Length: 79
Image 1: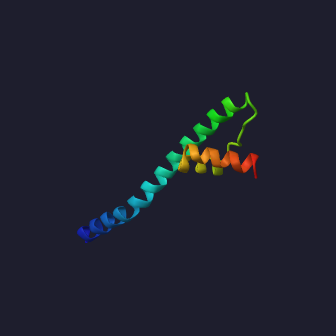
Image 2: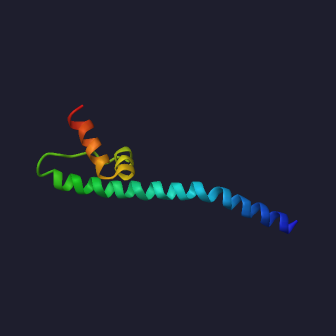
Image 3: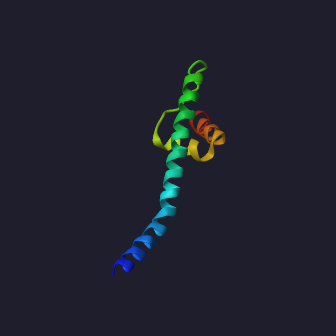
């Protein structure tokens, strides 16, 4: 009985480990996105270029990096 419980627990953690790894990676990228948006807003306020700091913008910036910031700026100022 104890062996079966250990095997099931091991199987459970193997199944859940990959989605948790993706979730942690996405959260880390979103945090980097918030930092990038903060820097953009700090420097961009001098020349009038700003983006709102929200979860969507941080996620786009975190996933795509600098091209994501450029995409958000194009969406805001051109479209």
